Length: 473
Image 1 (tube, rainbow, N blue to C red):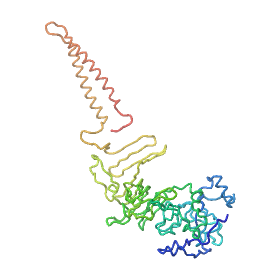
Image 2 (image 1 turned 45 degrees about the vertical axis):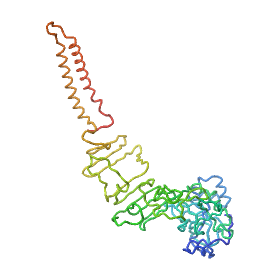
Image 3 (image 1 turned 180 degrees about the vertical axis):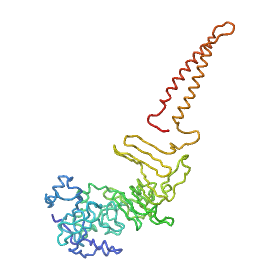
Image 4 (image 1 turned 30 degrees about the vertical axis):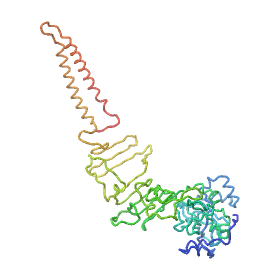
């Protein structure tokens, strides 16, 4: 591997990280890390998500940097190349590091971030295994992208390239203290080049992601782009555990798009949204040095983009604002309290079964009900009563075909008999005194006869009113 330049008088990364509140004095320390340590801090120079998908240009660059064709073909997915940090000294080579964990677990990492690297033999650092990104201080740590060198400033916002008279707050990506003798990497534009030239940067989406505050007993899995799974207890807002919360309320909250209605000022549209700030790279990120928002990232069942909420015990209807329609089928219109729930919420919800599969929605118990989408494409709804729509009442309802047919048969039989009698009576009519038929009565008799025939024909057409698609009692 080539020997990238480094400045021997850089800032102590280790002391800055563990210095507590004494930032100014600690940042200028010079105690180096031991060379015989198994775990070493490093800067990520390059990430290879999949060696089989890199461009020929990137392949040639890796070979020029000293990577053999044989090793290149065997790099596992998500291999990174790092530059070791040893106290105030930056390592003089790029070292490949395989993922530390098996492919069952893969953590987020981006070019330009600091990472912990493990070496089986600390005296031979030709190959390492990266473990996870280094966790930084409150005003630096960002789940989307963490630029570690911001910790060398009390406000984490060093940006010497921004015009002095610019009023809008803009945060940058400093190289150490952004001073010649206090660079992390000797090249002043090193981090800018990593961001622009690294293959891994092409796979990264930069955006504001609210910080998530968890309860001590929670287990949280969180991606870089506002997707999280929280295994904890029923929670409707603040991290504080309310006195009204009962035990046995274990909950899985899988949520995407927390607090997305943010704004670039002090009054976001949503209580759980963070303040955001512009960066010198042109995108927005969470403003970690401004006024803190106590509700940032908290659950918001109204505004969060999409959620799957599973709980042993919660007031799901109340939490999600479920409004019951007028209900004749079930007299209980009140929200269900302190019950187990599975709740889906999103702008659009799809339940899809493959061509040979089916979908079953089943309610158990003494009063069972089910909706089944069969594999042959038929839909079956089985229940004691089925209500379609909100408007119900004694004079509203769907026609029951068997009853409709029975009643129409009776009506048309009656009409046919009536018209037949009228036709018979009128066909033999004669005017008093002359013995000749009355023309008007004769015509009426003809119409009555026609009506009787039509009624008989209509009776035979009743079955056409029976739906071929919607079947039932």
